Image (cartoon, rainbow over all chains, first blue to last red; front, side, top):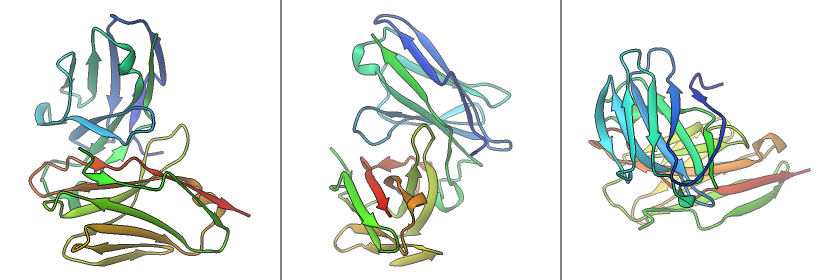
Length: 117
Length: 113
């Protein structure tokens, strides 16, 4: 158990809909990262938040947005869903955002499996 | 553009033998490399890492080798155990990217009895 929790575990929805994925980081971790893993693909970095502020952005679609709340949990909002958005969405957390990877081991949650029909 | 590549989607090894998983990268700015292990229905778990100032890092049965000139790294597992059966992801990052990890597509290792 990494200490990172994600809800829900599974989500089935229809095209055009909007969903919210939730992540609670490990106790004491200030950074939260979101990744998308599509079928037979590696994990693609979407976005990082550090202590409530956006820190880094990857290939995140404009239909997707995220935020980190004062209690440090994070939500990833996916809107106008398309079939191609079906994927595993992982959240990870680390202690801080020093930029020194040696100090920033990321711990992953179990993921949310999204199926868009 | 796949900056981190794992060209072998799967690998089967007998218990007790050595498992060698390979990873190639194209971005010469990468200076820190990691291996993650993933079981079904779980998130990836950090396994071992190596900085670009080293060419080898060892942790128990797991050793990672880095060849910067070839932009290649490998993970050796000796001896392989059935519990090692999982998907292994290679990842890379570089200083100043706030730890944004670039992952390969993974290699599924099966350790047979």
